[in-house]
Length: 392
Image 1 (cartoon, rainbow, N blue to C red):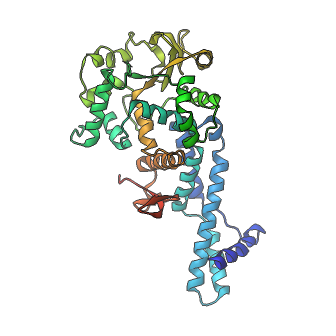
Image 2: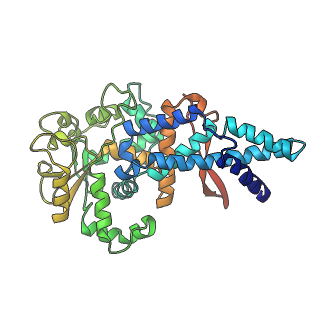
Image 3: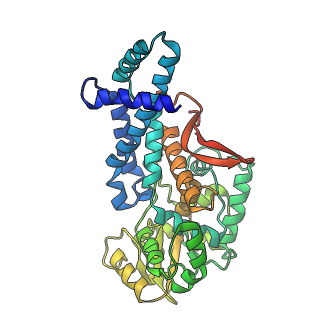
């Protein structure tokens, strides 16, 4: 292997001097650009604003890694098959000139790029909320089946888990969480008290230094302006954020739903008004939901604005309300991993698989699995991580 790497390094110099040209196929370029457009259109909330601007630079770096890997494997193949080293070098350069990168290698570059661009603040905040609410982790495809029109399969363990959890939520019996209009309150989120109780956890699992409440508060603030609505990506006729329809499909009943949930969400009685699409809404401590001090997308004069939310959170304790559907979606993509690094890689891999499984050209994923540039520990062995691609 050492000789192989030295040999490919010498051959690569020919490309660098311009004697040969390893030009990436136009199909590969179009594919990576298509993913960029897809992410920008439907998945931008999963990424930090400043990091997403680095997509072109990051994807170029991981594409170069895949070209290097392809170069080494191509060189190894011809060295083992050709009768002389001169012939092996010639065939290697000819192959690399016409195909230095395959569509399958593009998948790995894209997956790595999305993983490193994922908003770590979102993972931190959602992990804390998931722990407080004991949120079930469900496969994205199961959630999408609830948003759809077809008959829902109620015989699965996922349905039973979600039905039980949601029933406790809407009846305000889940860790004293209050339910209003498709939102559930998360006690003390964004407060110094909550940070103090999570300080050791944040230091151990998320790399946040001690006595750094500002980092914790910044993470919560940035997540408060996000909205996770994949209705356009799923080509849905109705919004996936229609909580009344969501609970109706699940068959969850009770006065807490019909009087305080689905009917209020779209009606004038909704205490959150025009901001019901926001993932997180913050209210003054002790105030009702109508005293909202933070949110995202309202346009009327009474709608909360991000600046107001920031001032309120800095001034004193706040109350956080979390959109149940959007929280379930983010938790689904995030997976069951607890450690920060595992969350990053799992989140990126699951998000890539979600995009590819629904709308990527079939030819770009020729196998049932994509091998991923990371490793996992299983039965005292170190194995390459891989993600499964769904059949369409």
